[in-house]
Amino acid sequence: MNNKIIISISAVLLLAVGLIWFLNQRRSDLTDELQAALSGEKISVLANSKFSDEIQSFYADREYMEVWHFNGSLSKTGKEMLAQIENSKFDGLQPEDYNLAKIYEFSSNQEKENKKFRNLSAEEKVTLELLLSDSFFSLAHDLEKGKVNPSNLDANWKFEEKETDVNYTNLLENVANGSSVEKAFASLYPSSDLYAHGRDAIKELYRIQENDTLTWEFAAVEGAIKVGEKHSAIPALRKRLIFWDVLKPYDTEDPLLFDSTMFTGLQNYQASNGMNPDGVIGALVAESLNNSPQNLIDIASINMERLRWMPAIDWDQEMVLVNVANYQLDYMQKSDTAFSAKVIVGKEYNESPAFTAPMSYIVFSPYWNIPESITNEEIIPSIKKNSNYLSQKNMEVVNGSGEVVKASNVNLSKDQGYRVRQKPGGDNSLGLVKFMFPNEYNIYIHDTPARSLFEKETRALSHGCIRIQNPDQFAKILLDNSDWDDEKIQDAMHQDKEEVVKLDRDIPVMILYMTFWADKNGKANFRSDVYNRDAALLKALRINKSGLDQA
Image (cartoon, rainbow, N blue to C red; front, side, top):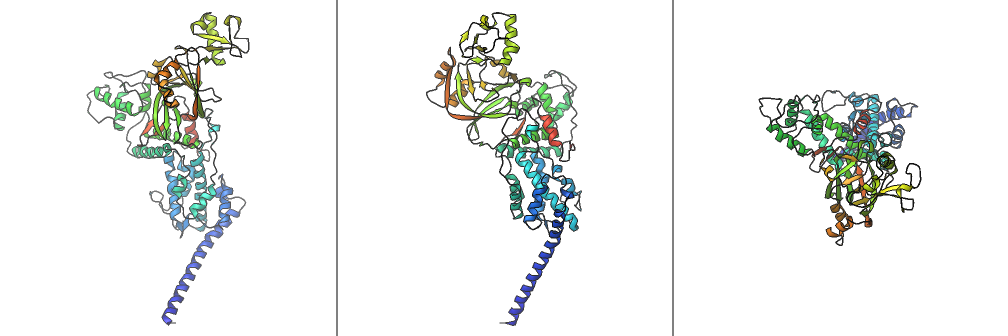
């Protein structure tokens, strides 16, 4: 064999041996440190971690090889992990919950955006390695199931607990073997497009916040301010309309005057935010305009957490979606809205809960079987004041078998087994039709004789059930049968006795409480927190893992 070839092969073999020695040496240095750190009885860096056992097992199974380091600094994977921690704010989470401040301490240029991690001692590299792994487990859990346990916070959240079979250790093993950190976390997001759109909207809010030069002291408004009137809050509210780009900057002779130019801008703002564009500054308008970009980020964060709480749902299926905070019902087919209607929801002391149940039948010309609580609190006192109250309200008393009995022979306060019901008709409190999805909360969707209430902007007015505008159209689209034309539906709604019509399939009904969502165009929508549920959840989200308030 040619001597030159022999020399070349020898050189290559020597280089390979040297490279292997170098890699093994590098590996053994950090491997030994990792093993030593994870073999102690108390691992200080993981002292407050809920995932200490999982992290120890993970590294033991891979012979204590590091994941986030390469050649003395953060690897590409490590940098990607750091970026995911920083970007968790777009999920409405707090990056500080995932060791961000501790990780930054190891950076040689902490003040700069592109952090460098160089010349670290073996001990520092081990600490940084374990911090990033703890961050991975913690962030994976919070993205998949939520940071806050709803059962400990919101008594009105009645959805089943989210089930999961995701193994975070396996997910981290995939990352260690070359999978993308970003894709690993994205696989944990709720399947709803609402979540992806929400992330985009929050990113935009952070961008807007960077350019925010306004002061956001609360501009108090009592009553209503109409165009042509003067008010001390007008200058601040005008600046905010300009900030949100629904009003162009302009000169005004009297800053306190609610002029016609501002009136047009206000109408644009109202229409863009789901309000009645009447050009009047009332309570809802003032509340909305007092929200700074940070306030809106907080509201968005709250609702992103609610989406993470949701059990697995096929959003492409046929469903009825009611957003209580938006006072709206949407009938969905393959993620598209086929029908929408205004709704009236429960009063603050009769809050409509958030839950899901299958709709299975419709009742035309229904009786209203009055709940015992309403009978005791409203009906009986009314009868005592007016003996003709029941007949005037088209009501009757029935026994346990549903047989009508003479009301004068029954003492509703004492006699057991009797109840009051209202007969079918135009003055029936359920209206002319009800839509049933049996549930333990006795909530259903129904018509109402008080149709003028749908013109109100705030519609938390019922005893808890959902009153719907245009119930005949809703019935027609649900029945989806040529036999049930407009005439037949109207006839069924105007009978002397109720008629039960079973649907040919069960339709999931979802009652949600969302004060923020973003549409497919990325437009953020915000609604008033009518039940005051947001504050408690925001506080829980802003408490960090060590129990400190990050607000």
